[in-house]
Image 1 (cartoon, rainbow, N blue to C red):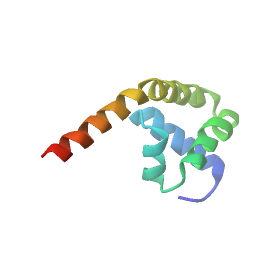
Image 2 (image 1 turned 90 degrees about the vertical axis):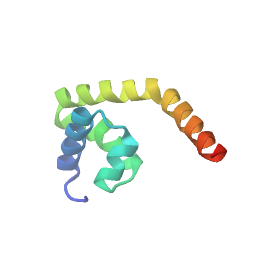
Image 3 (image 1 turned 180 degrees about the vertical axis):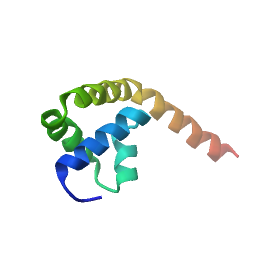
Image 4 (image 1 turned 45 degrees about the vertical axis):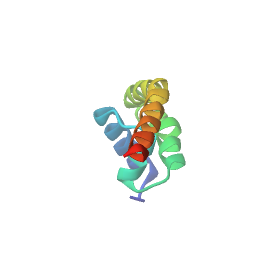
Length: 84
């Protein structure tokens, strides 16, 4: 998904806000890098659509607060697979 960066920023913002997606998940869906997603939703989206930017920042801050839990769950699953 190349194209116009401003349009892409709005599409990414809507996807993250709607699905509660992480930057990594959005990058996978849109087939772009995590750094591009971050640049789009933190800089370009702020200028393009401040209301959507605020919603996205809420999702991203929640994801950041929960990331240690997702990491712990991934580690737990890894060792559970190794036991069996």
